Image 1 (cartoon, helix red, strand yellow):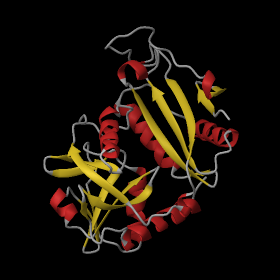
Image 2: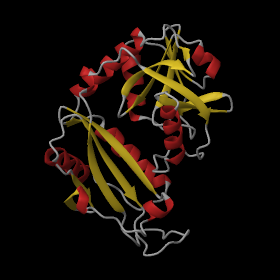
Image 3: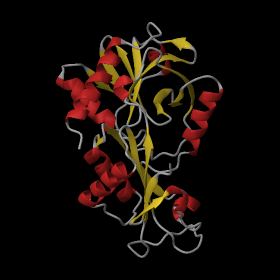
Image 4: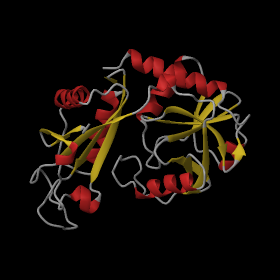
Length: 286
C-alpha cells in the first residue's frame, strides 16, 4: 500500500509526489530536515523539533517561519492517513525552486520554500530486544563545521554508516582533534564511575532533542553529568556507552573498533536511561 506524503499543501500518493529538478535542495543540499518520533500514534518531543527547525532555517537564512498549529495539523493528518502507530514523521524544507541553477540564492521571500513530509514505520521501542547493543567503529570526522544546523548534507555520515555496515559494525563514531564528536546520526555518550559524559553543545555536534530531554530526566534523578569532549581511550576504558536520537531513543554501545566496553553487554545504567526516557516521553506525547 502506497504511503501518503505531503508536498507544498497537497497530500499525495508517494508515487505521484514530485519536486523540480531546479529545487535548491536537490542541486545544492540547500535544505534542513527534522524527524519527530511517534509512539502509539502520538508524537514525541514535537515542540523541541519545531524550535530546532526554526533555528536551522534562521541559520541558513531561509525565509520561512513554520506555524506551530499548521505543522501540528499536517503531522497528525499524515499519521492518520498512513495509520502510523510507531515510527517517525520526516519534514524537509528547501530554499525552493528559483527556476535555474545558480550558486547565488535569492534573499528574502522572493521564492516560496519547498515543504515535504513523509512517514516511516518502526517497531514499538518498548518491545525492542536490547540484549545485543551496537558495535561501533571510528572514522575521522570530515563533515562541514556547522553540524549544529540539521541540514540534508548527509553524504559523509551516509558513507560512514555504510562503511560500518560493510565491515560488520552497526554505526561509526567520528573523531576530530583526538576526541569523539558524535555518531552518524546520533549523539554519543560514555559512563564512567556512574557519571554520564557527553560532548558539550557547540557547532561541532547536533543539538539533539533526545539528548536535551535525556539529560534533564537524568538530572532529575540526581545522576551526575559532565558535558565535555572525551577521547577514544576514555571511551574504551568506560563502563558503558550509548547513543541517543529520535529514531533510536537510547541505544547501548557495547564495543568500539572491536574492543568491548565494560562487560561487552548493554549496561544497567543505559537500559535504565532508555526505559526512563521512553516512559517520560510517552507521558507528554501529543
